Each structure stands twice: as C-alpha cells, then as structure tokens.
Image (cartoon, rainbow, N blue to C red):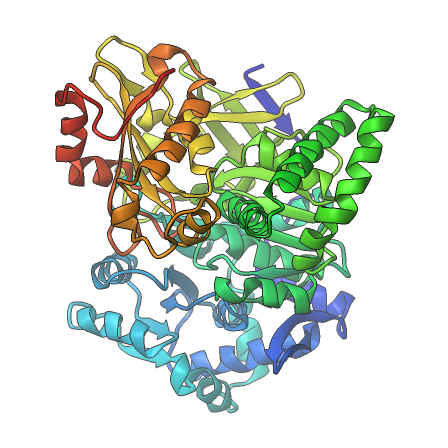
Length: 606
C-alpha cells in the first residue's frame, strides 16, 4: 500500500487561534488543576482559571513594555511551568514566540534571533544570559531582554495593570488559523537550522483531533510530567494539547531527579524519546546484575517480550501466563513503582524505539505509543493509539492527515499539521513540497491497514563501492540499545565494506564494568581499548549483523576515546547525531579502518 488517509474527527475552524484552546478549557473546567508546580517535597496545583489570570497579567506586561502584534520574542528556558505561561501570554499579546534551545551556542543564538527578526529576548539563567550577551552586539533589533532569574516575569506581570482587558482581548483575537503561531528552528542535523512557520491552525486542529484520537491517554484527570525540552516541537505540542484536553502537567528539567519527581507526581502518561526507555531498561538490568540477580532479570525480560507478543496475537498459553505473573511480582512491580505507579501510557518519538522495548514495556502494563513526525509537521503525523496500535510501527496517520510512499520509498505527508513554509527561504520551501505533499526525507512503508514503518533516512543511505544500498538505522538502533554504547555511526559510502564509529556511555560504563569484574573507575579513554569492553561491543555488533546480509554488515569498528555531545557539535538538541559533521571530524579514523590490513579494534565474524 502506498497511500493512506484518515479523515478529521473534528470540523475545522479557520478563525480559531491557539489562545482559544485555553479559553475553552477555562469555560469547561475553571477550577480543575491544569498544572502542578514544585513546592517543597510535593506539588501545588494551578487551576485553569488561575493560569488564565497569570497569562493575562503577563500579556499586559508585554503590551506595557512595547511588544506589538506580530513581534517576535526569543525564548531560552529549560522545561518549566514558565514555558507555557510565556507561550500563551505571547499569544494573548498578539506576539510570536521563537524558541531557542537552552543548550544553544552563542553563534546558534545569533543566527536564530537575527534570521527570525526577533525584537526581544527572554532568558532563564545567568549562564543563558552570558551566551546571549556574547552576541547581543550583533543583534541590533533585539532591544529588550528579560531574565527569569532576576524576577523579570513577575515584574512584567505587575507592570501592566494599566492595560485594559479589552486591549488584550483585541490582540488575542487578531490571529486567525492561517497566521503564524510560532517560528521553530530545525535542530540542524543536516546543516544550518531553518525556521519553520507553524500556524495557529496547525496547533488548534491537531490538538482537537489528537484529543479525540488519544482520548484514553489525555482524558481529563490524566497527568504527565514533562522533562524533554519544550523548545522542541514534540514537548511543545503536548503542552498545548494538555491545556486543550485538561491534562495536569508538571515539569522536571533535571533528569538526575526524574525518578524522584515521578515518584511524587505520579503521572498517568509520559512523553519521551527512545533513549529514555533504553536507559530505564539498561539501568534496571545493571542494578539487578549488581545485586546478583542479572540472570533473573534477563529471564524476566525474555518472558515479558514473549508475553506481549502472545497478547498481541490474542492467545497467551497458561504456562507463559503463570511464568509472567511470577516475574511481575518479583521484577516488574518494582519498575512500575519507580515510575510513579500510575503510568499506563508513554508516547515516544524523534527516533525509532524498536520492537523489543515496545514489547517489554507493554508487558509491564505501559503501552508505548510510538509516533512519527518532524518540526515541519508540528510533531506527530502518525501515531499508534490505544485502539489502533501495532508494535514496531509508528502507527497510522492522525485524523486529518494523509501519508503516501513515493516511488523511491520517501514518506510524504499532507494535512492539518503540515507547516506553512520555511521562514525567509522560499527555495527550501519549494524544494520540500511536491504539489501540496511535504517530502519528509525519511524512508518508510505502509502496511494494508495504513500503519507506517520507518526504514531509514533518504539522505543517509550509504552506497558501498559494490553498489549495495545500506540504511544505517537498521544497524545502529540495535547496537545503541547495548548498555555501554553511547552512540554509533555507521559509515562506508563508496567504500568496500561497512564500518562503524562507536562511543561509550559514560553514565552506564562504571556500573557495567563493576558488574563484569573490571575496575569501575576506568576512564572512557581506557575502556575504549580494554579487551572486555571491545568484546561486549563486538557482541552487540554481531547481533545487529544477524539482521542484514553479509554485504550490509559491519565488518570493522573503532571505539572512540571521547563522547558525542551537543557541546562538541556532534549531536542536535534532541540528541540526534549530526552524521555529516561526525564523518568530517573523524575522517582520519574512518580512513584508517579502510587502509589498515588488520582490525583497528574489532572485526565482525558475521
């Protein structure tokens, strides 16, 4: 099947804008908790009507400070309550928010603010301000700068008391569906970030349709703890959807405190990237190993996966059911408790999850609803739902969306959430549309029921010297799931065979070393050449190679003595690898794998 359309479930309203979602929520449940903010060891609820009051006060502050309708405000802040507060206050003032990742470098900040034409900037911390201030002189249009750590948001909210309610209502109602709601810059994995113009209709129509399609997940009374960056469209959309649907939202930007916050907040669903689920699984496995129960955990995990597959087929043998119930008491109940005890669903996106983890968490009673989308599609274009889910796929199109597969395998989409254009870049806009279909650059396949499977990225396909086409993700995803592997980059374009660069996970490494009878204080550089580590990475690569033909398999690998990070320029803010940058920066290492007659560090036996 090469085309699938799901009609919208909610009639479109071209006159609506994103601020209407909050007014509708207040009208429906004025006293219900819409947010919870940290308070001592617990949380304090913020009702929808109280949130509206704070949004209106801040919007008046923006007006009093000289923000005009259509003005663009840069915003650099970690995931927090203030994110949604500023977002909606900007809409109520008629302004447009331009998110800047809180990890962005001065040059990235300069590019986004200059290209967008921002006239004001909000930063959260002194460190954020220092990075911005380094390039402020190159940004003559950015006049006003507010700093959250200095209490500027509270001051702004107090400064607008003379602004009349009617002026806020006038500004709030100016935008219609086709107008720009936000300008979000791509993560830059394929070059300089491009500004994506997302409209009010993108947010309104997507939120209204997704709330119906995902009603079991985002029903009133449900809750979520956001911890991935809200500067990215994935969390930003969920935050807007939560306001529309009446979901209570908490925030925890510090992932080192995530388990603690999950335990106290007790969310009913989570939003995460696959790396988070890999970390949860690997941490649990290594903790069990340290306690002498590694063998039990692995048996439990294998049983969980078998049990989930049996559930999916519609028939669970009695013996398997009994075995699973035993492991559920011994192992899985503790994992559920660690995540707060109430999590029933998790929405995963931005990278492939893999069927193994999908089945594992499904057996625990946590259904991971994997989806697919880009900044250009306001996050999800397809997603598995509780009533239509197929592990190993990224689901069918959301209501109001169409997906088709081009002759070369490229995924193309159109519908309610596709962006309007690239800002100041008509050439890029023209290049990325065929008629009214957005060309994603990703490769995939649709099954007979319209479920989409991602098979790779068009621009990342490697063609070996022998003419073999290789999709790196097929090899990289299973290797990256190994507890000691941080990242892997498959190479081999126009080379005689496939090879790989591997980095180690510095967080997991000490525990793994200790569990395997090695010195836990070993540095990443020392571990990169250690025989036991080399053997473990070789084992992971050999397992991945069983999924492909010999011509597509990884024949050599090199473990680097460093890590790929965002600050090193090798990862995007959403932790995707910048393949082109890595291949360029490690060109000598790559060349050595092809010119050295003996293995550099590993030679696959596959």
